[in-house]
Image (tube, rainbow, N blue to C red; front, side):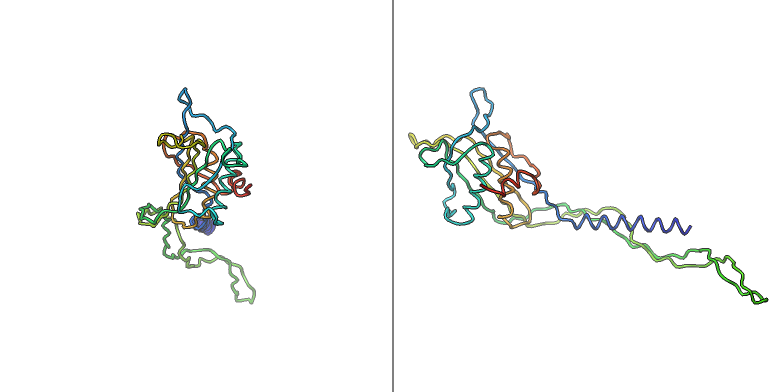
Length: 251
Protein backbone atom coordinates (compact mmCIF):
# COMPACT_ATOMS: atom_id res chain seq x y z
CA UNK A 1 0.00 0.00 0.00
CA UNK A 2 2.80 2.38 0.95
CA UNK A 3 4.77 1.70 -2.27
CA UNK A 4 1.71 2.16 -4.53
CA UNK A 5 0.83 5.46 -2.85
CA UNK A 6 4.38 6.70 -3.32
CA UNK A 7 4.36 5.73 -7.01
CA UNK A 8 1.09 7.58 -7.56
CA UNK A 9 2.51 10.70 -5.96
CA UNK A 10 5.68 10.53 -8.05
CA UNK A 11 3.73 10.04 -11.30
CA UNK A 12 1.43 12.97 -10.58
CA UNK A 13 4.33 15.18 -9.57
CA UNK A 14 6.17 14.34 -12.80
CA UNK A 15 3.06 15.06 -14.87
CA UNK A 16 2.47 18.41 -13.19
CA UNK A 17 6.13 19.38 -13.56
CA UNK A 18 6.11 18.55 -17.29
CA UNK A 19 2.93 20.58 -17.84
CA UNK A 20 4.37 23.58 -16.06
CA UNK A 21 7.58 23.24 -18.05
CA UNK A 22 5.76 23.08 -21.38
CA UNK A 23 3.52 26.01 -20.47
CA UNK A 24 6.49 28.13 -19.51
CA UNK A 25 8.73 27.33 -22.49
CA UNK A 26 8.99 30.04 -25.12
CA UNK A 27 8.78 28.81 -28.67
CA UNK A 28 11.28 29.70 -31.39
CA UNK A 29 8.91 28.75 -34.20
CA UNK A 30 7.08 31.48 -36.10
CA UNK A 31 3.96 31.17 -38.22
CA UNK A 32 4.05 33.52 -41.20
CA UNK A 33 1.68 34.12 -44.07
CA UNK A 34 3.17 34.00 -47.57
CA UNK A 35 1.50 35.26 -50.73
CA UNK A 36 3.66 34.89 -53.85
CA UNK A 37 2.88 35.71 -57.47
CA UNK A 38 5.04 35.14 -60.53
CA UNK A 39 4.52 36.17 -64.14
CA UNK A 40 3.31 33.06 -66.00
CA UNK A 41 5.10 31.67 -69.00
CA UNK A 42 3.36 31.00 -72.30
CA UNK A 43 2.29 27.58 -71.03
CA UNK A 44 0.70 29.14 -67.96
CA UNK A 45 3.32 27.76 -65.55
CA UNK A 46 5.23 30.19 -63.35
CA UNK A 47 8.91 30.34 -64.24
CA UNK A 48 11.48 30.21 -61.47
CA UNK A 49 13.53 33.36 -60.99
CA UNK A 50 16.57 33.04 -63.27
CA UNK A 51 19.91 34.60 -62.29
CA UNK A 52 19.69 38.28 -63.18
CA UNK A 53 20.91 41.64 -62.05
CA UNK A 54 18.80 44.07 -60.08
CA UNK A 55 18.60 47.55 -58.65
CA UNK A 56 16.93 47.80 -55.27
CA UNK A 57 15.04 50.71 -53.76
CA UNK A 58 12.15 51.49 -51.43
CA UNK A 59 8.62 51.28 -52.73
CA UNK A 60 7.38 53.22 -49.71
CA UNK A 61 8.23 56.91 -49.93
CA UNK A 62 7.99 57.16 -46.13
CA UNK A 63 11.01 54.89 -45.70
CA UNK A 64 14.35 56.68 -45.43
CA UNK A 65 16.83 54.84 -47.65
CA UNK A 66 19.72 56.42 -45.77
CA UNK A 67 18.61 55.05 -42.39
CA UNK A 68 20.38 52.17 -40.70
CA UNK A 69 17.10 50.21 -40.48
CA UNK A 70 16.55 50.43 -44.24
CA UNK A 71 20.14 49.38 -44.95
CA UNK A 72 19.74 46.41 -42.62
CA UNK A 73 16.48 45.31 -44.26
CA UNK A 74 17.82 45.77 -47.79
CA UNK A 75 20.87 43.69 -46.86
CA UNK A 76 18.59 40.86 -45.72
CA UNK A 77 16.68 41.11 -49.00
CA UNK A 78 19.91 41.12 -51.03
CA UNK A 79 21.02 38.00 -49.19
CA UNK A 80 17.70 36.32 -49.99
CA UNK A 81 18.06 37.29 -53.65
CA UNK A 82 21.61 35.92 -53.76
CA UNK A 83 20.19 32.54 -52.78
CA UNK A 84 18.35 32.63 -56.12
CA UNK A 85 21.48 33.53 -58.07
CA UNK A 86 20.58 37.21 -58.38
CA UNK A 87 23.12 40.00 -57.95
CA UNK A 88 23.10 43.78 -57.62
CA UNK A 89 23.96 45.60 -60.84
CA UNK A 90 26.98 47.94 -60.70
CA UNK A 91 24.85 50.62 -62.36
CA UNK A 92 21.07 50.96 -61.79
CA UNK A 93 20.36 51.64 -65.46
CA UNK A 94 21.97 48.33 -66.44
CA UNK A 95 19.90 46.19 -64.09
CA UNK A 96 17.56 43.58 -65.54
CA UNK A 97 14.87 44.24 -62.93
CA UNK A 98 14.04 46.76 -60.24
CA UNK A 99 13.45 45.30 -56.80
CA UNK A 100 10.88 47.22 -54.76
CA UNK A 101 10.81 46.63 -51.02
CA UNK A 102 8.40 47.74 -48.35
CA UNK A 103 8.35 46.75 -44.69
CA UNK A 104 6.82 47.88 -41.44
CA UNK A 105 4.31 47.14 -38.72
CA UNK A 106 0.61 47.89 -38.93
CA UNK A 107 -1.41 49.55 -36.19
CA UNK A 108 -2.44 47.23 -33.35
CA UNK A 109 -5.74 45.43 -33.52
CA UNK A 110 -7.74 43.19 -31.20
CA UNK A 111 -7.89 39.49 -31.98
CA UNK A 112 -9.72 36.76 -30.07
CA UNK A 113 -7.69 33.67 -29.29
CA UNK A 114 -8.49 30.37 -27.62
CA UNK A 115 -5.95 29.73 -24.88
CA UNK A 116 -5.60 26.29 -23.29
CA UNK A 117 -4.29 26.03 -19.75
CA UNK A 118 -3.87 22.93 -17.58
CA UNK A 119 -6.25 22.47 -14.64
CA UNK A 120 -4.31 21.48 -11.54
CA UNK A 121 -6.27 20.60 -8.40
CA UNK A 122 -4.92 19.99 -4.93
CA UNK A 123 -6.42 16.81 -3.50
CA UNK A 124 -7.24 16.74 0.22
CA UNK A 125 -4.96 14.94 2.64
CA UNK A 126 -5.89 11.47 3.90
CA UNK A 127 -4.93 9.08 6.66
CA UNK A 128 -3.40 5.71 5.85
CA UNK A 129 -2.66 2.70 8.05
CA UNK A 130 0.95 1.67 7.71
CA UNK A 131 2.79 -1.17 9.45
CA UNK A 132 5.96 -0.27 11.25
CA UNK A 133 8.53 -2.14 13.28
CA UNK A 134 8.98 -1.06 16.88
CA UNK A 135 11.03 -2.20 19.85
CA UNK A 136 8.95 -3.15 22.91
CA UNK A 137 10.51 -3.51 26.37
CA UNK A 138 9.70 -6.91 27.89
CA UNK A 139 9.31 -7.54 31.67
CA UNK A 140 12.67 -9.30 31.77
CA UNK A 141 14.38 -6.10 30.60
CA UNK A 142 15.03 -7.20 27.02
CA UNK A 143 13.55 -5.73 23.84
CA UNK A 144 11.34 -7.43 21.34
CA UNK A 145 10.69 -6.31 17.75
CA UNK A 146 7.00 -6.19 16.92
CA UNK A 147 4.89 -4.97 14.01
CA UNK A 148 2.24 -2.36 14.79
CA UNK A 149 -0.39 -0.54 12.72
CA UNK A 150 0.22 3.23 12.66
CA UNK A 151 -2.23 5.85 11.41
CA UNK A 152 -0.20 8.24 9.22
CA UNK A 153 -1.38 11.49 7.61
CA UNK A 154 -0.63 11.75 3.90
CA UNK A 155 -0.79 15.35 2.63
CA UNK A 156 -2.74 16.19 -0.53
CA UNK A 157 -0.99 16.36 -3.88
CA UNK A 158 -1.52 18.28 -7.14
CA UNK A 159 -3.35 16.32 -9.82
CA UNK A 160 -3.90 17.06 -13.51
CA UNK A 161 -7.65 17.31 -14.11
CA UNK A 162 -7.67 18.28 -17.79
CA UNK A 163 -7.37 21.40 -19.94
CA UNK A 164 -9.38 24.60 -19.72
CA UNK A 165 -10.05 26.58 -22.91
CA UNK A 166 -10.80 30.28 -22.70
CA UNK A 167 -11.49 32.77 -25.47
CA UNK A 168 -9.66 35.96 -24.62
CA UNK A 169 -8.98 39.21 -26.51
CA UNK A 170 -5.34 39.97 -27.28
CA UNK A 171 -3.67 42.92 -28.98
CA UNK A 172 -1.70 41.80 -32.05
CA UNK A 173 0.64 43.56 -34.45
CA UNK A 174 1.21 42.58 -38.06
CA UNK A 175 4.83 42.78 -39.19
CA UNK A 176 5.28 42.61 -42.95
CA UNK A 177 7.89 42.53 -45.69
CA UNK A 178 6.95 43.00 -49.33
CA UNK A 179 9.45 42.32 -52.10
CA UNK A 180 8.63 42.57 -55.81
CA UNK A 181 10.51 42.67 -59.10
CA UNK A 182 9.54 44.64 -62.18
CA UNK A 183 11.11 45.14 -65.56
CA UNK A 184 13.71 47.88 -65.62
CA UNK A 185 12.04 49.91 -68.34
CA UNK A 186 10.67 53.39 -68.73
CA UNK A 187 6.94 53.93 -68.37
CA UNK A 188 5.34 53.47 -71.76
CA UNK A 189 2.01 55.04 -72.77
CA UNK A 190 1.12 55.59 -69.15
CA UNK A 191 1.65 51.95 -68.26
CA UNK A 192 4.08 50.94 -65.54
CA UNK A 193 6.73 48.30 -66.34
CA UNK A 194 5.44 44.75 -66.00
CA UNK A 195 5.84 43.00 -62.67
CA UNK A 196 7.90 39.81 -62.88
CA UNK A 197 7.18 38.43 -59.42
CA UNK A 198 6.23 39.52 -55.92
CA UNK A 199 6.33 37.98 -52.46
CA UNK A 200 4.36 39.38 -49.52
CA UNK A 201 5.19 37.91 -46.12
CA UNK A 202 3.65 38.82 -42.78
CA UNK A 203 3.52 37.63 -39.18
CA UNK A 204 0.79 38.60 -36.74
CA UNK A 205 1.16 38.18 -32.98
CA UNK A 206 1.64 40.14 -29.76
CA UNK A 207 5.28 41.07 -30.44
CA UNK A 208 6.23 44.62 -31.43
CA UNK A 209 9.83 43.68 -32.28
CA UNK A 210 9.89 44.42 -36.00
CA UNK A 211 13.67 44.17 -36.22
CA UNK A 212 13.59 40.65 -34.76
CA UNK A 213 11.05 39.53 -37.36
CA UNK A 214 12.62 40.96 -40.53
CA UNK A 215 15.19 38.14 -41.03
CA UNK A 216 12.42 35.60 -40.38
CA UNK A 217 10.23 37.23 -43.02
CA UNK A 218 13.17 37.57 -45.42
CA UNK A 219 13.92 33.85 -45.10
CA UNK A 220 10.34 33.07 -46.15
CA UNK A 221 10.77 35.45 -49.07
CA UNK A 222 13.88 33.54 -50.21
CA UNK A 223 11.91 30.29 -50.48
CA UNK A 224 9.10 31.73 -52.61
CA UNK A 225 10.81 34.09 -55.08
CA UNK A 226 9.56 33.32 -58.59
CA UNK A 227 6.76 30.99 -57.46
CA UNK A 228 2.98 31.10 -57.30
CA UNK A 229 1.22 30.21 -54.04
CA UNK A 230 -2.18 30.99 -55.65
CA UNK A 231 -3.33 32.30 -52.26
CA UNK A 232 -1.95 33.35 -48.91
CA UNK A 233 -0.64 30.28 -47.10
CA UNK A 234 0.72 29.79 -43.58
CA UNK A 235 4.18 28.32 -43.09
CA UNK A 236 6.23 27.67 -39.99
CA UNK A 237 9.80 28.87 -39.64
CA UNK A 238 12.20 28.07 -36.81
CA UNK A 239 14.70 30.79 -35.99
CA UNK A 240 17.44 28.13 -36.02
CA UNK A 241 16.70 27.06 -39.61
CA UNK A 242 19.66 27.14 -41.97
CA UNK A 243 17.89 29.65 -44.24
CA UNK A 244 17.39 32.04 -41.31
CA UNK A 245 21.06 31.71 -40.33
CA UNK A 246 22.02 32.39 -43.96
CA UNK A 247 19.88 35.53 -44.03
CA UNK A 248 21.20 36.83 -40.71
CA UNK A 249 24.78 36.29 -41.82
CA UNK A 250 24.14 38.77 -44.63
CA UNK A 251 26.21 39.67 -47.65
